[in-house]
Length: 386
Ligand SMILES: *Cc1c(COP(=O)(O)O)cnc(C)c1O
Image (cartoon, rainbow, N blue to C red; front, side, top):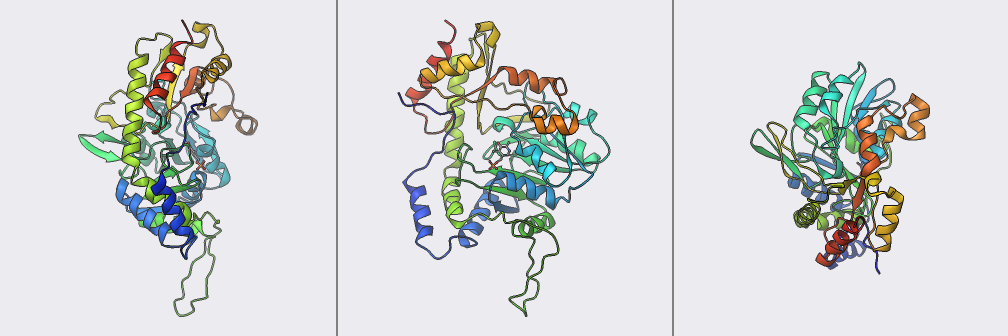
């Protein structure tokens, strides 16, 4: 039986042709496809500037540098994320600080964010976990009151949005993040193989991101066209035209991907609604903040493993036997040895993220899943406890 993986890319002949066209052309990198992809993505989400980079981690690193986060600064993020959302702070010599999640949304809890705020906090990295946008107006309200920069790690959330005070905004195109970062890794909602981007409305931040992506090099003497200088240390975080051609092609299908992900999510939610040992993702309104368009990247359930008398490892093995691949998102980042050893983090520091982790399991979710595959997953999961 062929395994259904927890996530995978959706590529078609049009995507392949877009890449082949670049390979047969003049520019493999630093060419017109990069700018075309950046413009198309900016237009899609409503951002003035988009800077495409080598991967989502590079996007976060560049965002930190552009915001001048550095030694002595603190950066608050969620423990329920991939390592990179915290590591970017460490790359620039700042300290990653973990603030616990809200147990219903699995995103940063704004109340705790306010409580955990300390002097020297220069930035917040808010992660739209599983594709569900954070309450960015609330988070930005807290951060900006303290003069901090708001970075939204939307690696999971491209194509999604929210309604605030009756008006709809897309992730990457609302005023409550100074910079929004994306990842185009193949498990994410759209892919360029490896790739990432920063979206911002701020001209100065955009300019800095562009320079930092390419060694910090400035060409500032038109009369001496060979001349360049490096006022600040940058990196080679460029992305290729090959990747951006794929990105441009994928972007045209993003709305379709999002819709199919919503349909699959709905099917799972209906199928599991009466299973008492399993909790589906819940969407709840938060006052004037409403989630009308969630671009689900992951379908994460909470399973009462002790209730059904099986460990998570046993459940994953049993599902694998039934052809269903699963994954765990995420081991709380503050529990990583690096963060435990460096800052003394440990069990109990983020109890909601730790409790969430004990019971979480990501089921397969990707646009090209067939109806039969969806039924296969549902049957296998329900079959865990008969
Ligand atoms: C994937 C991911 C990243 C890193 O993206 P890469 O493209 O793999 O470097 C960062 N943050 C989150 C939340 C992610 O899921």
